[in-house]
Amino acid sequence: MDEPGRLFSSGTWAPNLFAGKVVFCTGGAGTICSAQVKALVILGANAAIIGRRSAIATAAAKEIQSLRPGSLVVGISGDVRSVDSMKVAVARTVKELGRIDFLICGAAGNFLSPFDNLSANAFKTVIDIDLLGSFNATKACADELKRSRGRIIYISATLHYAGAALQTHAVAAKAGVDALSSQMCIEYGPIGVTSNVIAPGGIARTEGLTRLNDKSTWTKSQKMIPLQRWGTVSEIADATIFLFSPAAKYISGAIVPVDGGAWHMQSVV
Ligand code: HXC
Image 1 (cartoon, helix red, strand yellow):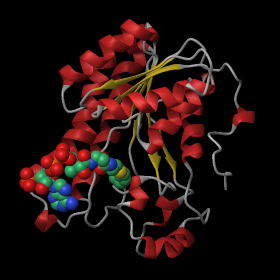
Image 2: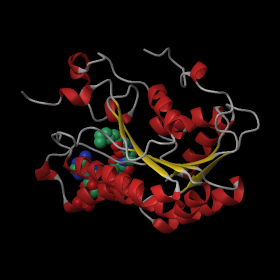
Image 3: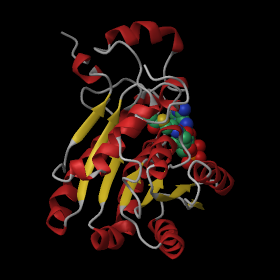
């Protein structure tokens, strides 16, 4: 297990791996995405983090910028449910940071609800944030990614591989996100853009665990994971660094579960 405060496997990666690169990250103030952006910035990138609430995005950007002297990190308010909002965020990113090389689609919304209590609007709300939001961010970044022969990472999940109680909306949305990544792989591969998915399992200190998971089952749940523990955000950061690094230049259309092997244990037999 990582020691607390560890941001990524720092000895593994070249210090200036991402010098000159710019990352555009939706949901960038969240626990997982901010860890991804921190790692990229420490390794030389500049970044724009997009969030619905301006003050939170700005504060997160300021904190991340402080990690590497000379880095530029901007916090931009934007709503992934609006493609126009994403276009405004992209325009500001290009104006202030010059380009976009990496897109992380990480904005997500979720809650637990039995199907019988799930209104059409509740279902649509999560589809709009997770799936339409990923589409909108991709659409808005498309020209920049084509220009830079960039890379895309979608943050998905593993729960739709077998289905999950109380998660009809998120299961449907994340299945769509995986499909969107496949489409981008196929259509943008010839342009030199790669598209991959990171599928986190249970990651310590994230909302997915603390708000959506019953703490009384944690000990039992961790024993069900082949690697016997929750993951850490630094392990999501490591996967992100790898997928954006030159070492992954021939990897596209992949789904990379970062879950300690947990999805293999979802079978009931
Ligand atoms: C049933 C619910 C509900 C609940 C909201 N709704 N919460 N229905 N059970 N617990 C319904 C509302 O009644 C409404 O439908 C509709 O959803 C929209 O609700 P709003 O509150 O108006 O939506 P909004 O303000 O846009 O908020 C979006 C949200 C909210 C998703 C509901 O929770 C949010 O903003 N979350 C962002 C942060 C977040 O969830 N992060 C978690 C990420 S963790 P009606 O019919 O009444 O109009 C994560 C991990 C995933 O994603 C891992 C597995 C996939």
